[in-house]
Length: 275
View: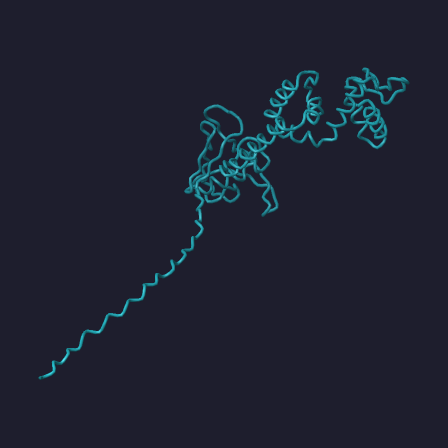
């Protein structure tokens, strides 16, 4: 009997190895560079109100030219490349420089006008008090600083202990015999109107000294009259008061000198005994 030949079977499929996913490549985030807007034009403004139209004086305006080491006359002539009269032609025609509603814009196409404005003695940058260059970035920084100062001052009124606030209150003439709420309220008004002075007063020797002297007078350790300040118990004069001056101011200045420092030390010692 003939043996049947077996056909070779198909090779068994090998199991596929699991696909390995590539690790994600971390993308570097580049810092965004902010471009500051550059304005080639210039804007000038008056520092005080001068009506709808203000004409900047030009006749006989002289300034010191450091490059030439001499005083030169300055004037604006639109058709002249120089703002110095001695460098202008005989046919140079002067043109009025006018502020309207307190503002004046100088385009890039008028560089000689900008030079004239920058060198003019009325410019704040040159010590003048009539007009100034508008610098919005600088003005924003100034306003931001003011806001931060105001926030700090308000926080002081709210957070400081009343004992720390009393010397400052006395310095600014606030009635310290009122309620704590009234004292803080009055100091808050001062903090909003005299912000920097209010903040600096907490570290001021003058404020601390005046507080000690006022307490010494209240506790009858010293007595102040229009012409002198004396010890209450012995009636011995500490310092004389010139006509027209406040006794407290005179005594405060005296106590801050080397000669008057022993008086201040004695007053502090006596007040501590009463505490």
